[in-house]
Amino acid sequence: RICSRGTGVGADGLITVHSRHDGLVRIRFFNPDGSEFSTCGNGSRCAAQYAVDHGLADAEHTMKTDDGEILARVSTGSVSLDYSFNVRVEQELLTTLQNKPHKAWLVSMGTPHLVIPVESVDIENFEELCEPLRGLAELGEQGANVDLVAREGESISVSTYERGVEDETLACGTGTVASALLSSYKNLVKPPVKVETRGGEILKVDFDPANGSDVYLEGFTRIGFEGTLGEY
Image (tube, rainbow, N blue to C red; front, top):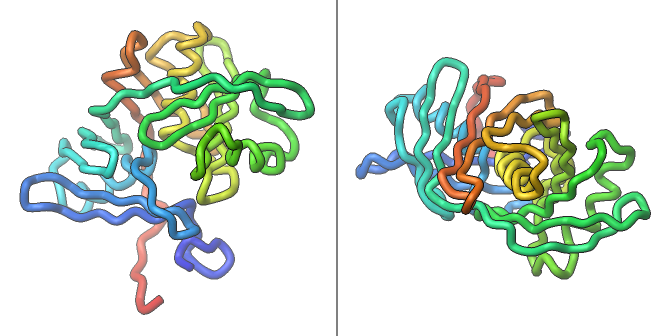
């Protein structure tokens, strides 16, 4: 109800932030459909900014998620994350997009992403095309997010269809990381990679291309508004 854009605040998901006595900030992620998932890149950046703004953590602090710990660094208008877990290219798949065969790769960084290289991410009927792909049998019972990624010179552009949201999300942090790693894996770009999202945000992704470790994500942050939820 909170995430509903018609009757609630309106959001792609809900994040809870809890400061623990051991110096960690515990964060949890929920989709609009109520399902919980293990990690969210841009959500973690937002949570880090929130924790600092509300005195729950120092500018540099560690956040604990269900998929591992993340080191966050908050500065004026920007948040960067250092991940302690690896990004992995799990398998190659043959899919169909716009009635044409397309190679795709399942990339995991806690949250699974089906990454599909395309000529341009500006395609018609994006949601209609991606909805059946997110539930392919090869992706398992829970399916995966779908990322279309296009090379733009030395950078990339990404569009993401997010499971649980069941719609396009305008900036997906884990999707940009998965897309950047796959683009490096395919020798299209070299890290650090500049990524433009559909929402117009520019994110910087860096990693060790040899094994997908030492993952770094940085981008701009801003507060949209603040409010208080009563009985809901």
